Length: 239
Image (cartoon, rainbow, N blue to C red; front, side, top):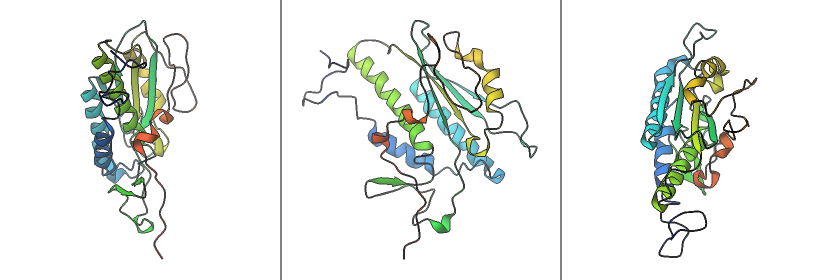
């Protein structure tokens, strides 16, 4: 049998044997992700930013998603190449709507003397996780990826087959630096997302509502804040 949500029931009376099993893996992954100093405004940190893109590409591939790492077809104002965009597609059924998640792997610089804890070494304290990117935007990105993993595993465990929704990911590396090349890269790769979904033009990088089999949702808020239980804030020096 299954629960009302279609999940296999827990013998202990819980909702599901699968739901919640990703929590520890999520925290471990976030610790590793926060340690990557992906500060997009610092061109000296380019290699670290590329590590951030590779980290997400690997995470999406582990879901079974088709992954494409795209170089924006523009040149930044300083003459450098913008950081790549990581795109992913999981499930491709034209009968179902497509949920698109937008996020970014770059972060703001951290003025380390103003932090009580090292900003790129995640620390748990008082029920929160502290570190650069835990809430903007590495935590929500990983929360969404792990939520999709749980959804997929729940449906598979219930014997119901793939979930009745396609999932797409658009994860950029220049959000904290003006999103240089984002619109151009997205426009150049629209067809890769299949005929069942399309992206409308917008003045800001976001996933927006669309028509049937179009974009039906998106945004960093889709990350499960309860799973992440994270807070990023500048910590004042101890007195």
